[in-house]
Length: 159
Image (cartoon, rainbow, N blue to C red; front, side, top):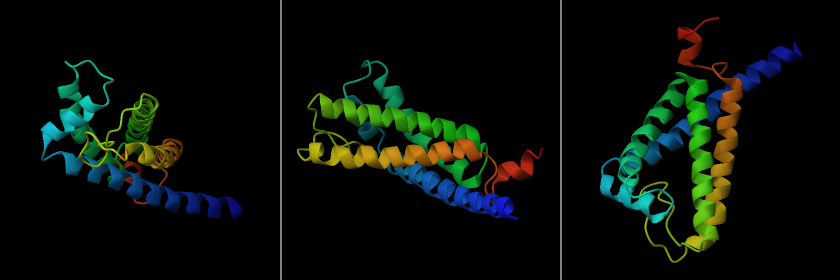
């Protein structure tokens, strides 16, 4: 009985985590979609990628964020979406850490915006902590995969 209770609890926690992480991705991407130039400028502000790659990343990133978010909320290809989510969070943590270490004071651009921000250094620890928490949540979803409540995966890919 105890194993069943644990499995049920983890399935509900998995649903909650899917909705939170997926919701964050949907909001982050949807805010950036209407202004692609701002997204490109935000990617450029990090000074990490070659100039020729920046426009593609700036344009595609919001689309990837929304797709990953929708997949997580629906529980569709959950494990794959969670792996992509982990990779994105690792990249964002590295980018923010790099900007901080190099003394670049920019808005992270996570929810739109980007560019110079004189108060950025004070915000970096909180942004990194937020992304680490979301990375951990995404890793939980990699582990749980389709074994969460109300996931389309469980209906489409029965084992």
